[in-house]
Image 1: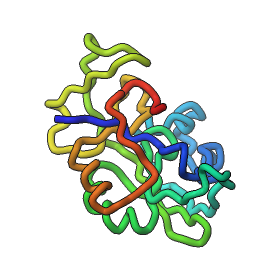
Image 2: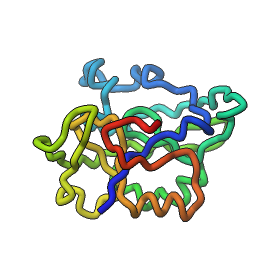
Image 3: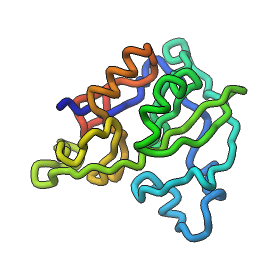
Image 4: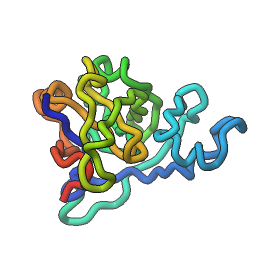
Length: 182
């Protein structure tokens, strides 16, 4: 089984102008500020209290001016364009939750991955190598690991192939699970 880190294609695509600080006030009081800032690591489902937000893409430059169909947002979350949500939404729904976001007048979705898999910690080293327990992945095509504080969304070939078949752009699939894409 091939496993990939789903990473942003920084060289061509623009980011949205939305940060976790923009939604902190929406979290119920039962959560600490640390839990809010690291909601992915604490595997907090946010759809019930996520406010409808409006934002836009940050200005690009001559090299990174394209609008992505799919792109990482914060930690193990993914931003999906209306096109990406139409093609991938049903496939992704059992593995997390979606919450709406209006980007430049269009209905985007943020996918919050809630599927955790185990890491073979004896074979892994933070920042160097992550070895995921393939038995804990099962049929999941998107997942995250607490080994590196749920900083990335990981996927199998099945998700990668769906993104490629639907010609969705904005991410790269990196076999180096513990390093950032260069």
